[in-house]
Length: 94
Image (cartoon, rainbow, N blue to C red; front, side):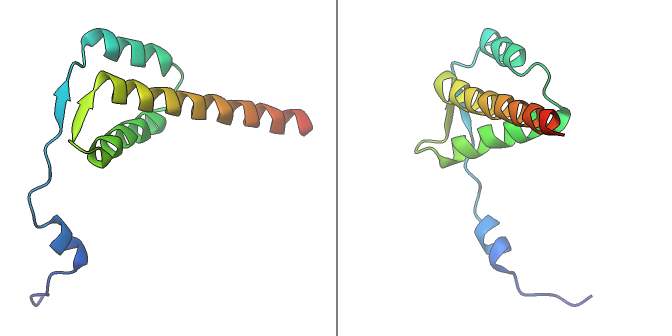
């Protein structure tokens, strides 16, 4: 294989990625999140954590604190509950 010129993706990723700083995230907050996400599939949990990462990288200072973590958890839990509700409504119609 010949050498290729770096594409846009490689150029964007060339710099050092920002490091996420974690502040005030305790075991109790993690346990609270685990209780709220009871019934989530492995895929939903993976997508949840990708959402947490995206929220941190989208923030001004690249810090994951308990407020941002809870905000993303609550959003994804509400999304999950809505999906279950809609699935139940679809089954009732069938």
